[in-house]
Amino acid sequence: MATATRFLRRLPRSLKLPPTLLRSNVTRVLSSFAHKTNEPFESRIRHDSSIIIRSFSSQGPAPIDYSSILQEDEFHRLANVTINNLLEKIENEVLTLKLGSLGTYVMNKQTPNRQIWMSSPVSGPSRFDWDRDANAWIYRRTEAKLHELLEEELENLCGEPIQLS
Amino acid sequence: MMIRQAAKKALGITSRQSTPCSVGIFRSYHENVIDHYDNPRNVGSFDKNDPTVGTGLVGAPACGDVMKLQIKVDEKTGQIIDARFKTFGCGSAIASSSVATEWVKGKAMEEVLTIKNTEIAKHLSLPPVKLHCSMLAEDAIKAAVKDYKEKRVKTNGA
Image (cartoon, rainbow over all chains, first blue to last red; front, side):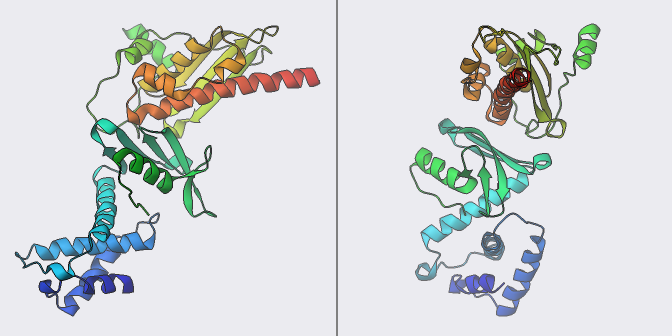
């Protein structure tokens, strides 16, 4: 909660959000995401905040104050998390990532096995189990972690480093 | 047509819609997959108590895929002389296990352990969402070989 309000305070000052409006929106958006269990808390907060940004900007064109705008790398991190989460919702818990000629990733939940299944154009199929000690999703055959494997493969495929956790 | 459908049901071959099978992508099966579905090779069972038979059973009904792959091994040479499969699952799973039975015939046990799911997937042009089927087929081969070896150890040890 504190993280969210701290983040919102750093929004472009030109948006001029009244403090009471900020607080009430944060509670409303946070409670709607209370059901998510697998994500770390930080990414959940960032997701909520970026939704708030979009809903306020629809009130009309606001002059952009470039001196206090989001730093680009932070923007990329937030946007990536948001887009991934949105994709997951839209496609009924199956995430499809099409990279054109580079291939397609498909990720889905396999509830009977309590696993996340991934199909990668680089490493083929893999199945991740939640490891409580490591606090990560791990593919037992290779001891690879889901987030690290994705980051490594995407960096090699797209030529740019990416942070997914 | 009716007989074929009844036969498919009897053999436990049905097409199911369950994740990751139903992703809503409009793509048809590759002709190799359709071929294996229409003209299944090596469907059937061996007697699992036969000492020359190794049985690999992989997958789970709840996941939408179960494969039983059996190999008959020549005890003297260690070569696989025959294979049978029965699969419950999507067309890609059926085709993957069918290809697996074709590829293990006439090969040594150590050699079939090197069959990779990527080769099966490439042969059938499986889309990304069906790569798991080919991996299950690879697991079925390994499970069948493992079962045969364990049975031999038991009979030799006893």
